[in-house]
Length: 391
Image (cartoon, rainbow, N blue to C red; front, side):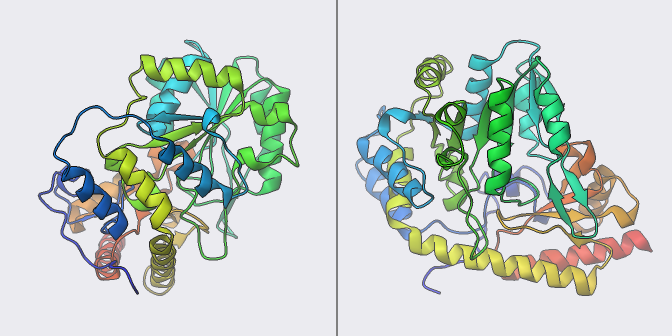
């Protein structure tokens, strides 16, 4: 390979993943144990060498970088349809505050990224769950559209948060699913907010579909009933630089959110974030191609290891993200207890599934975005922990 995806020591670097706790094998928080692509590093050095670090503006080059990147996915955007935010979750926070009121209900599809719960509840809104349907035979999930329509039809439901691709199950929603979601949200006057932060991290041969790209299947009104949150942070392992955009074709949504992001102080870039994102989108496609190969190989390593060494744990089908969803139901232990046992006995920290919703309690989430050498050590410790539990 052209690029370096080998071991790097992140201990004692104020890393949330490695230094917040003392676990030997932290496989929880969603960042990668890989060095950034060389063009990103060069952009950082270039900015740092300027030796002046004052306030920054959003350049046209940044808008162009986003716009050109999403053309690959069939989504045509313009500068006046994009709003900068310091992150996807800050943006969703502002969206919730601007377009819903205290006590309103916001729908999510569980099991789902646990911060969705936090951002709803912390803003004094109510969580409504549309539980995804798990097929234990095929190890896959689908949407219960009857339940979804029933809950969207409730006049108290004002917003739906969609995760596309879905964290933690690694599902790329189909065009058919996205169209039906968009039609139902429009029918019942529910604003659709699509978090598409994991969009680039797909298996070879797989590609996600941006909700807002469905111009041929949805009406203009149905598309305009949405806001899409996008970012290079997960793709290029640059979450610390805090850079994202919100895309909407709805002029009223745009104007209102622009004011809210300013009020919440989420609309200003830091001194490095603009240059880093431009370098990522403009100069790092080859690096991303190799990264996706590395992640796919890691998925195969995990799948084979579980089948051969830990058959009591099943890997849910995954077409996207570097987060794997493990079915641990045959172990007959709740996910908090299982996670704590593995941490205490073997230093392996996987996220307990209960964090992602009540229907996640038989699962663990595993981050496999690390060098193979480290992954193999983690898997061996995981196996030893499961054997200790069974014995």
